[in-house]
Amino acid sequence: MIIRKFDALVALYVCCIAIAELLGSKTIPLLTIGSVHLTASTALLVVPLMFTINDVIVEVYGKERARSVVLSGLLVIAMLMTVAAVAVHLPASSRFAATEPAYDTIFGASVRISAASLLAFACAELLDVWVFSRLRRRMHGKALWLRNNVSNFAAQLVDTFIFMTLAFYALDMSVGANVGFLLGLSIPYWILKCCMSIIETPFVYLGVQWLRTDQPQLAEETHARPSL
Image (cartoon, rainbow, N blue to C red; front, side, top):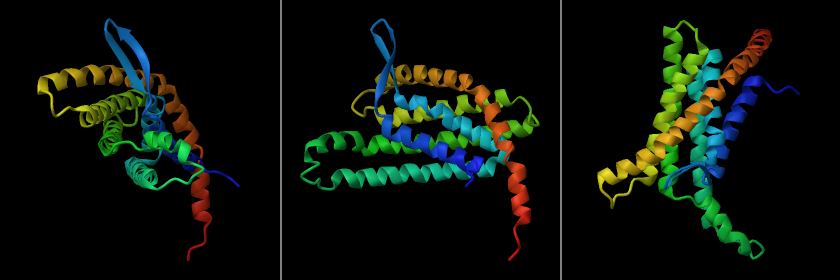
């Protein structure tokens, strides 16, 4: 049995989505500047990889295929949210009752946080595909490293600010207080994600080269199939 490279890449993409949604609620300390403590979600470990996979798919298979993968990812997030909401409200068996509070704490994310994550993901991923594909046309397929990072920087900026605003904007505080808080939270996090994108740039080249070797074999199999 052979696993096609594109299928493996999509499986990795879906895995990253699941990791970000299920494990991303934990925050870790990054840096302390005076009295300011900068933290980041553990989702940072996989979010830049998701944008990298997007760009690899656009480069090899085109914008429409990448957009289809992103929309499939949105369905995965929506299903995770729905099943989690149902699961935490179902009664626990006597054997599981002792660990029920921990289960509900981990998987019972608020509707606001989940909705913020879904909307931020949708806007950022689709923007990444659009920016990368437009740059690819304008630059005639050259400077992959530049196209990858420009599209990632733009998309991750949108992802960060949409999520932080929807998830943490306090309606009982002034606009000025909210803006100061959100900028202090979002800018360092976005810069860190940009740095991760730069570090992962070589993997875009490796991913494109690796995925392209699967195309001739797929083409041969397609032509070899009998017509119905």
